[in-house]
Length: 495
Image (tube, rainbow, N blue to C red):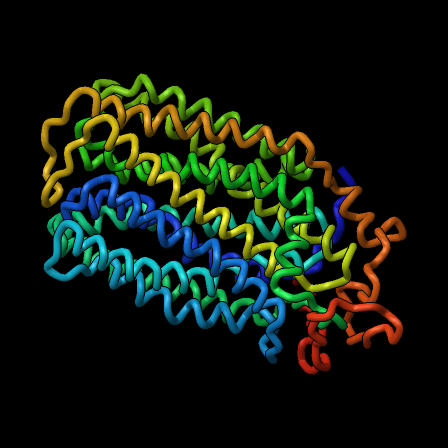
């Protein structure tokens, strides 16, 4: 699996980067956990329409994510190419989130239109922060194993964000009376958490290395084509999106599962803590597995464990809550790995493109990646909402629990315990052809590195390198200006 290199980044830099995931975890989780039930049970929106409200903003992300990634690749700033975007997202996302759950006196379709408009604004602000944020590890270090370390810190803090979202948000809603006022108070409180975490990330990454300027950059269309030509990247993306679809469906079903299968809506927070809490303990284990056996093997293993725990919930009963908790803890043991390994492998796939082209295109790759992630996480709730609609679920007013037909209760259970695990396992099919390991990634930066494209420069380079005078270039390629303050920043030594 290759030799472990001495870390080149300080723990302060690890933490400064990772704290941003408290915010991304909160925003990625709360709408998936509560927005569907808010629409259906509070705003009287039919399930099928509610699923569409959640889906459409994520489809919008398919356009905006790659665009923001490409723009961040081209950004020239004394703050580096990524951090200006972090600041913009940190200042806009909390406001949009608070407004998402503060709905005027509307119900049904008018309420759906309001939520849709605000959600589009929120997901756009999230894109502005997240896409450059995800691009940063590929530029912070070239070491295969240190990327796992960076991402293990990130997922540990992501877990904190998810715990805040899943454990705290429903409790704030309940403390506020469980109705619209409760959701509005939750929006303000979680918005404050978002503001704190995202600004802390912006400030905490001041010492993080940034990508060196390059002599040529491709157009937006060429950058997307480059991502599409990167086979390891496409394999990772396909697996990740299918699994995100399954996890999105499961998150959307937690509240329904607690209310209609376990008979107690108050179980939602407990189930969420059982799912996410073990990640804080098992993260070092999965990081060790990645170092010892490789990231691909680690991803397959944790996915199978996650699916096994999920399938066992088909037998869930309110008479055996202790068993339900145990089954969800098994899933939680593997959940950390399902979040760690895809993001730890992404920088390796980006390095392949960088080594081949010599160009800074991490943002374009991560834009496509996050678009796929958000699409999967949005289609998942839409799939769950579709299952509810097909099985005859009756929408309710003001969160009331009403008697549902037996077919609807079956749909609630199977949509939560059967469909998501099957999707998680199905995604593994795409990893069969993935072949980037530690030795391969090390070779990308050594004597075995593939030849550079015509006119490209070595990456990363601490100094600007002018275009080769006789090198051909694409007719719509841009020429980057002088390096200025964008030369590679060297991080402080670890204490």
